[in-house]
Image (cartoon, rainbow, N blue to C red; front, side, top):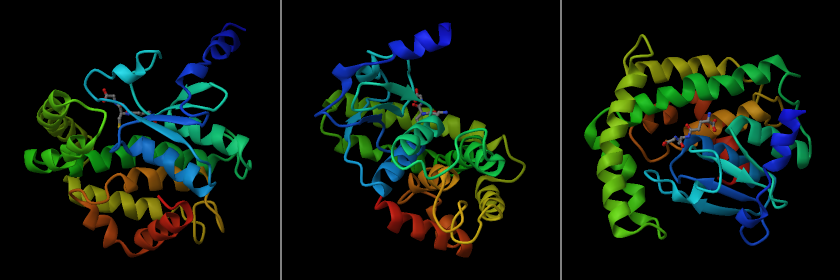
Length: 242
Ligand SMILES: N[C@@H](CCC(=O)N[C@@H](CS)C(=O)NCC(=O)O)C(=O)O
């Protein structure tokens, strides 16, 4: 009962922009790409608010300090990318099983956060130079001040270089080799064209989102040169338009 009450209170109609579902995100965040890809594949128009990574003032209204935060057009707000995917699919098409109903889908959705998400961070932020390159996006965000751009680029690059190093320690192999190993493992979950068989399910959007955030950054060549994963990636890109 207490939980139900708490959930009911998470309604923030004033955070809905232009009456559309609104995604509070970092442009570069892997977990946010999962949500963009699903919304794209269903043709659902949405608004997006770019959150400034240091102070996160755009999330002050919420109890959360990580993105993505999704606010549906009715004001219902939620976090956790995999939960958001389930919520959106449940409301728009209900094309795949909910959490707890399909062990394989659950396993690979969890893999996206616990393994793949950490593997890409170890590669992207392997050196200060590559970290700085990944933070370059902040200089192009319209709603950030010049100071926010400067601080986020330099501080962000330094912080993420350390995060990258700690993620690398989680795996037995060096970052690039580990990434290749994880892509090999991931491709064992494909059932034909997608994890979901003939059409994508939650595991497809979850893992695609993670890899999509790497496009253009250090290490994406590992994805491009993996024959099976690259073919799957291209199918999802066509499907989602993201
Ligand atoms: N388990 C969460 C992870 C979300 C997450 O770690 N987001 C990062 C950005 S990629 C974040 O906002 N971190 C907090 C910070 O940067 O202070 C999910 O799947 O949505």
